[in-house]
Amino acid sequence: MMRHRVYRLGGRVSLLGLELADWFIILIAWLALKQLAGPLGSRLSLFIAGVGTFLAFRLWQRVKDAVPERFAAHLMVWMIEADVYCLGPDIHNAPLIVETKAAKRITAPEVAHDLTHAKR
View 1 (cartoon, rainbow, N blue to C red):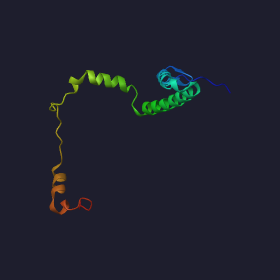
View 2: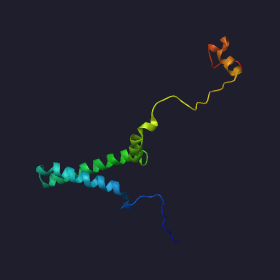
View 3: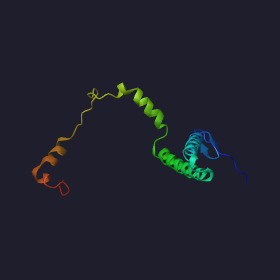
View 4: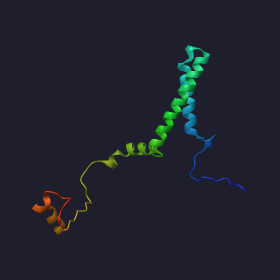
């Protein structure tokens, strides 16, 4: 049976199944932790940098899965256009229209004590 490659049109560029942002996090975490753990000795610093990079990457994956896609870009646009989202009166308000029979049923004294056993 022939197998065909499936192309995702909205997919991001990936290398070994990891996106470029993931590789950036791995690289930065490795370099930072290698520098911080340098005075401890070569084998210990490599171990600490490896474990720390793994933990930083796992934390990054959890954060990335928790926030919506393109969250940072949308946040920047929202912060730049703050005047659009100002608090003010509702100019185009649509009034809520309630039937008078329904309003009378709710405010009737025999119904007011318990709405779960109301007579209809």
